[in-house]
Structure formats: C-alpha cells, structure tokens
Image (cartoon, rainbow, N blue to C red; front, side, top):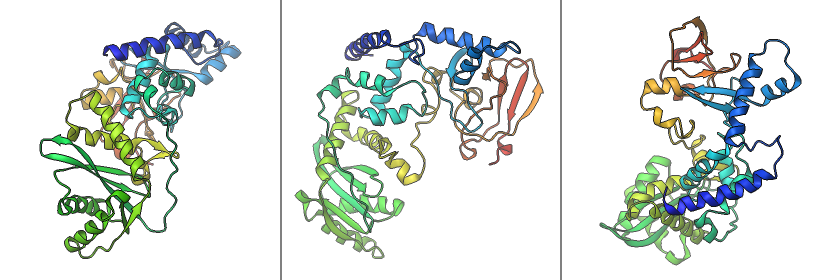
Length: 387
C-alpha cells in the first residue's frame, strides 16, 4: 500500500469510527472485538441442546460460523441453494471495498454495492459512500448522467477510433460496442487504414456475429461506410448498412478515464491495459446487470477471487487446496456420511444441518470432502452432482 492509499485508509477509518459511535448494539457494523465475540456466542448457542433462550434462537437465525482451515468466519446461515455471504469487521472493511473499487475502475456506489452484495452481508451503501468520499480519484471526478440507448428493432454495433501516444507500433484504439448488450471490445491499431480495421472486426463478427447496422461518431462520418464496404468484399454473405451514433463521446471518455486509472498503477504501456479496461467495462452493473451478463447470461468471474474471501486466497494453490477450501456457489449435493476421525485441516461448517453451497455442476470437475464438526465427513462426488 503506497502513501496515498495509506492516507486514504486513515481518513476512511477515522470517519468510520465516527459513524460507529452513532450506531446501536444491534448494528451489523462490527468492530473486530465484537466480531470475534459474536462468533463465540454463536458457537455457544449452537452447542446448547436444551434450554435455549430467545436470544439464542435469534442469534442462530441471523448468524452461522464457517471454519476454513484455522480461520473462523461469521456468515449468514445458508440453505442448500444459497450463496455464502460473509460478515466483515471494521479492520478489514477498507481493504475489501478498496480492492473491489480498483478492480471495477472507480465506479460509483450502485455498481459497487451490487458487486459487493454478492459476497458480503454487511457492506452497506453507507459504508461504500463513506469510502467514495475519501477516494482521491473519485473526489476529482464529476458525475455524469447518461441516458441508456432505446431498444432497437435491428441489431446495431458502433465503431470508433481513439488517438493515443505511440506504444511500440500502435497509435490508436479501435472501439467496438454492441448496442443491445453494451458489450465493448477494444483493440490496438497501428494505423487508421480501413483494411486493418475491417480485419479486426472480421475476427469479432465471426466470433460474436455481425450487426445489421454499423454506426460511427459524427466526427468520422465515412468510417462505418468504408468499413461496411470492405467487410462485404471480405465476407460477401454478410449484409450491413451504416449510420451515425450520438453517444460516442461518452463512450470514448469512459474508456480514456478507465485506461488512465489503470495506467496510474501499472506500466506506461496502454496496449497492455486495454484487455483489463475491457473487462472492467463489461463487468460493470448497469440497469441490474453487466454487459457481460447480458451477452453470455452469467456474471463475469475472476476465478476464485470472485467466490472466496481475500485472506483465504493465498492458501489455495492447487486443486487439492481447492477441494479443501471451496465454499461458495450453488451445488445440489449427493451426500454420504461416514465416520472418519483421522481427517484434519478440512473445511467445516459449525452447523451440521447446513449443506455446502458450491458452484454449478458445469463449473466443478473434482471430488471433495467437507468436514462437519469432528467426526462426520461429507463426500461430494462430481459424478453424483445432478440437478
């Protein structure tokens, strides 16, 4: 963490302490001490076989404890088809929000909230707003409200070219965006030659399909027309028409802003950042879903980063580790229970009644064991996973 990030963290934690002082005991905003105490209380309530008080039932309805290796995490009680959601405490709150904010390219509260809510129960809009108020880069930005494009009768694609400083042989960025899904594709260009542009678009269209209408910005009135003609020569079976688009400047400004954000923390080679900016843009949630989800029907994933807490990731370095630590997603589980007291260092739920929520069958390709308490082993066989 550099000096700027450290200062940002100190400002955030100071404001968080002020916020914490205004909250009551029933708040889900945990100090680390309160977080650990709650874990112990939950474990104590679960051990009671008789004589449970109303507060025990209330506590168990709200919380459960998940042990991963030697780390205990407070979670929302899960059912078989639930995604696991973690509670966090104040000492880890900044790092969680900060890392997600960087990954998403300094987006706003709504997009951040939609993403964080998938994995964390008590990262609220209030906390995200608190973070955004101390983010140096976000303080400099001015908020822009853009109206989403209306539904079109025919599929449309938009192309544009952004001039850049020379990076090796590359001087331009080719932008292609599908209007229906807002899915963006970015490619490096050496020249503004129509043949070079058409060749790149041909790769895109033969992978994702070609639109009926290809538009360009008003500053490049003949670009789409020239490209359409060249594509027809290269691929005679495809018929497209050309047109003009009005939202092009907003799109190019967004790309430049996100690319500058990426460059601020990486090398000066913008060509290396295009793929990451493309992923950022396609992962952002707009009108309830991201462009990636609109196109492919699933949320964009970053491997285990999307499903496991950050402090667990360094311990997962092989498929065997994954069998031990994988804890999220949706898995209908075929379960066999047998005694095996010799097992150790295996993931366990504190609640024997809770089943593991894992990923879908298509995403799993291994067998795994899950330890529940000290004497029971759940064996998950991939071949037994059926919807």
